[in-house]
Length: 103
Image (cartoon, rainbow, N blue to C red; front, side, top):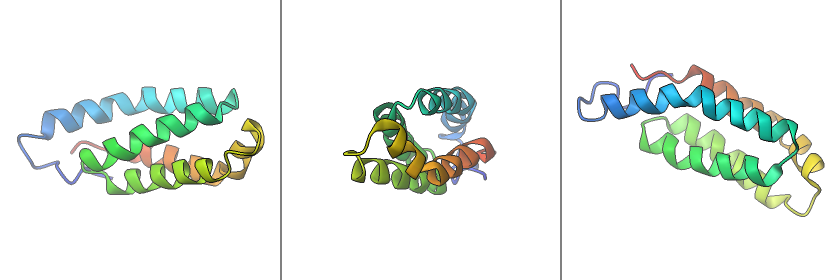
C-alpha cells in the first residue's frame, strides 16, 4: 500500500519517516498485546488512526479506528478478554502497517 502523498514533494520525506517508524510501532503493539495491556493497545491504535490519515494511508487509519472503537466499546471486559475479542482487527492493523510504503 502506497501513501496517497507518495508523489507530493512536500510530504515525501515525512511519509518516508513515518513508514520507517512503523516496524517499531508494530513491535510495541505486539509487546502490549502479549502483555494484555488493552489500554496501551487502544492508545497506540488511536495514534495510528490520526497518523494514518495524516500521512496518506486511509486504510491504516480505518483499521486503527475500528480496533480503537471496538476496544473502547468493550472496555468493561478484562484486558485479556477484551484483546481476544478484537484479535482479528488487531491482526488486520498489523498487516496493513507491514504493507505501508512511502513510494
